Length: 200
Image (cartoon, rainbow, N blue to C red; front, side, top):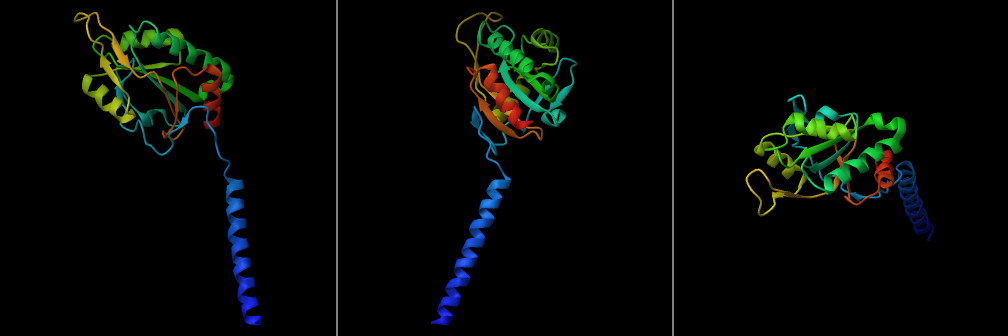
């Protein structure tokens, strides 16, 4: 009988130790709850390879150490893109001093018309720190696939007068270049700033 009690005591003690270690581990690692959708572990954006305003080829590693926000758009977009860029400009204002730890990248889905110079002038009009990335159709295809981002030329229009259909979400990557949050294109500057702060 005493042997049974002894075994039971050992089992209970071991069980309590496991429970306690699990609780301590949970206390040490606070769960992060984003306003947007958590996409941690998806490795989105790893194959980013586009050209900046100085005609330099850029990769995700170039922005390590900063929280990176990626948006796909184009300069002749009539409504969604300027609205989104204005929202991001306001987000940077809300971040105050922390804005220097964030890099906003607008990737053009219309490389035929968005030259590095045109795109650079467009994004810097919203905020001097914003970077516009364009490139060849092949570079865009590879980069967009890496983000699982949709884009296509709108039906109709002439050879030089046409629209582009594209996703309007914002991708948020942490300081190590890992995709963390997918934010709705309708999100407020306040909500975007909240999610950025969680990654700083």
